[in-house]
Image (cartoon, rainbow, N blue to C red; front, side, top):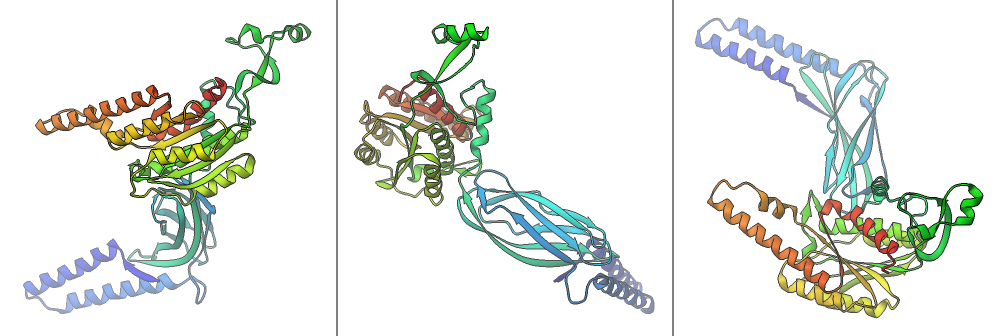
Length: 442
């Protein structure tokens, strides 16, 4: 417990000091300002005594409780609730602060409270982690004012709590975006996509744009309305997410690293694939394959992926695409969709990626996911205010042209390419997966 002078205390002390200095300079009697100092000290002492009154003996003025989930999601606001209970017999006003976790951004603190005697209040704030891993919430600090407003009392309540920061395990909400875009196949229930004549799923009312050959004329006659046959795409196929954990994935966008963006997109796309009946696997690699999770299906497969992604991080090693793709070809024999997440830093790595991806064809279907550098894009379009800006803008434009050539070379090699801003990778990857299933490319 700590006593802290307030602004009112400082003003009062400054005023009494100024009067004493002025009295000394004017060579006036010392008695008046000495009396004033005694009065000021008495007022402060009375305020300090009143600050301690009205509370239970040998106890604190508050009871504090924190409620937070055991698992946080990186890059997403996670709610935390602080509950304060006033145990004194007087009204207390002040602020409350919670020790933040490492690698996290806090919004909604400090919280402000105004509690009557015996009352309670729940104050909510959000923590947005920027890194995965085990983190700890520590102490809650409460500061409240004295009756005369000259002093603040600060109390610290140790409330240690461990939380695990995972990739964005709640990102399935973004599927609602696909539904609003008109993709009726992105239903949250089964997430089956409409495909060709593979496996009959159900009859449904005719919609504008449906093919005439899908109309079931007998069923339409019985129901007195047009109905069409809907088929689901083939299931029980492999989707393997190959994530580069080399130095190219250490960059950040809006405080979130490329590796975290890749993991979040992979988990959501894997969730869609698993619900649709496919199997999902995971490979991490840099200068050599680091970890491999064989494709598996069902809820157990999803839990395995989440646990495998929990402690992943990008290192400083250069990336060897050839060894990674050779590893995949050796360990995954059945035709599969390989989703490769990477960032390219120089022309040689781009050529190596194109060559390695081409070696997967035609047995497998590769999809390369590249994340744009938004800062370079901003530099390429920034207004020119001086000679130096011209060179910066030219260098940024040259970098963008080089990146476009990479995308073209990958597509010419036969690979599918998703080139998107980091914040858009997750929904666009899900949409691309659904399109691949609907068009029976896999």
